[in-house]
Image (cartoon, rainbow, N blue to C red):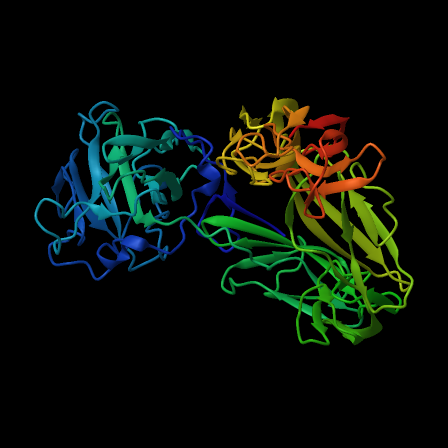
Length: 631
């Protein structure tokens, strides 16, 4: 469809003979849009100077910078007349008005003053609305940023009978003080008796809300009498479609095209002049309408249509939770309507439900239905442990296992990424990685080919590294040593025996036996590590075994005793006579031999002893010798 509006001029006869205008528009290029959108927007208070004329003869809604007269009196005057036959149109030819072209129609006759020029134009017409406030009665209200048409039918009234001499009017249009169009009527020499000419321009209101309109006569020399009729200011002719959009008809049908202008001259495809035009076949059809001021053309392309035919494809199976999108493999270019089994009307349907799905496609020529069966296959049910944070020292790993239901089926496993896991095709993997955050994903496929995936976020924390100083030490029994741990923010030492505080990094240790102290430390990430300190004791001992004693009851050296400092333990203390007979035995460090055997004092002489002691670390020492019993 393509519409075109073209302005033209014509004689007032049934053939509307088109004249070429020689116009000078300051805004050139707008002439093709210079067609009015209504008979006369200003008719409400200036209806094209028709009868009945007011008693004064002055047309309502009209003012002039010059004078109204009842009879012609020369330059600078105007009057309202029915017809005249002066100038080139003398004799039997009369200059009728434009509106009805005969008796009873009036037009404005303006006799330009001799002073009129391009730089000093005489106003031949301005609007006037006495109902408006004073100071605004000659203003037309307009909408900002809107295109308007301003024009009038004009003609040369006083040309010489030779059609070329004597001068002719120079007419101009002015809006808000700006010259917008000018026409020299003397350039129109055919026919000799001048006819009415449509003279107009387009104008955009910009930021204006009012318009001051003027029709000017800009030449005062010679016969510059100017005729004016049917003044128009308003919206341009609509460029909407005459014939509508391109369309499609069904085979065997008839489309009746019609013109919206029943009183105009309608020409179909350049020949037919009916108001309607029947179409039964494809092709391009056009209409030209001659409205009396402009010609309007439009085209329409007619295509043939048939009932739609399409396919939704084969029956299909989807996995549970997935969707399938169905759409016809063919959609008519001339349009169609759709009705799916779920009552929607789009050109496609997405569904995850099992069952039959159908589509009815219709156009103006009929309808067609196709359907497919959707089946839903089960998906595996997968679960993974919750997101976790772990501490992994170098070489450590954790096991991540996927639980899948239903059990007893064969599944395929794919773990990603594979950088920090072992075998990625089993239901469980070993995971090991440096500190960081990792997303571990498992995709599981069942025997139906349906997949399900889950993922777990594993945050590997910075591992703890606990160091001790010293890690091995030998100290004398009863001495102290300070232990020191580093690499954590909290510590716990075990065993607590011998420590002044087991929960500080640097406790003081005073073990009473060989001890391995273990410290467990925790760092800022909450990770733990441990280290050991091995303390070996050096045990001092000083065993004194006397070589004689005097069991005489004087309280001095009455017993054979073992003396000596140190944490040693008496294991054996035996005394024998010279015959090897055992006569005394004890494991009590504080007990000695009083020189008796079974409560009876023995003889003075030399006796033999065997002594064995054990140090705290389990080391044993043996002492052998003789002792003299003196009485």
